[in-house]
Figure 1 (cartoon, rainbow, N blue to C red):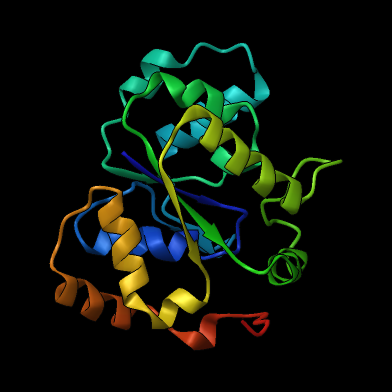
Figure 2: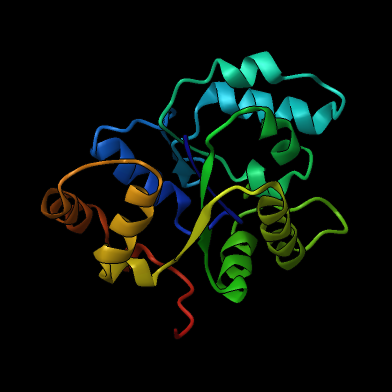
Length: 190
């Protein structure tokens, strides 16, 4: 299973939508109220339960998730989530990364945006996630947003790393139709 995660406001929904367009449905749909989406409701419930009740045994519920790819920022944002998913073998992660200045500017535009808990910063959560996936031995790749918009080879590399097999040219055409630089707000130089 390939898991797409990140701080929020870093392109995870775009990548999940692309997976859906390629026939690898991550679940969920677009949520206008938060300008993001493609999070499977079952996965969100599991991860929220793990966060709200850290002693929850979700092993059977996690094993029942049959998606080839899922997207959820809670793998990064909630420290209780990743250890519980260790019961699931063969996980691979794509960590979407973006300038934290741009992430914070985007988050501050709307109070409904997904934010770290009080006392945590996005930088600390990113560092903690990288340390934990490395400690647990999970393979992962990073994908930079928004530079991935103009370099499809990078997108293709992380998706095929995650076990998603498809034709490069077909994927590149779908990506070109999906991406729009005009929708990228808060662009630091890179």
